[in-house]
Image 1 (tube, rainbow, N blue to C red):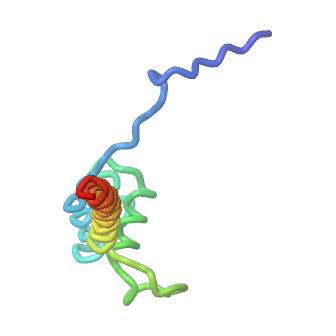
Image 2: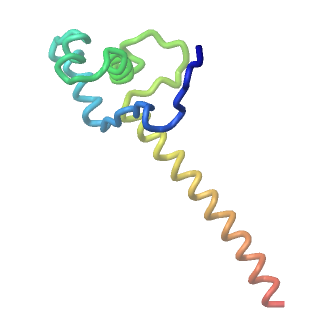
Length: 109
């Protein structure tokens, strides 16, 4: 018996992208409006595990047990990712400017 495995991208499921606002609103359904996590997941058409992650992230460190102090809510996490991306861009630009300064210093001699 031969089992054929298709490794093409056609069969791969893509992970849905949700906006920060959508995630926060979904978490608020559970936290502030009294929905169960299952009800929120069913009503919004998202997985239960996604709702759980969003609620956990939105509650933040003050409402959950903290194992480390680096816990962030959803908006804090998005800001951190954006700042890291910006930091990477700035470091790259700085390296380019350093190389340009060396180049023009040699050219001026």
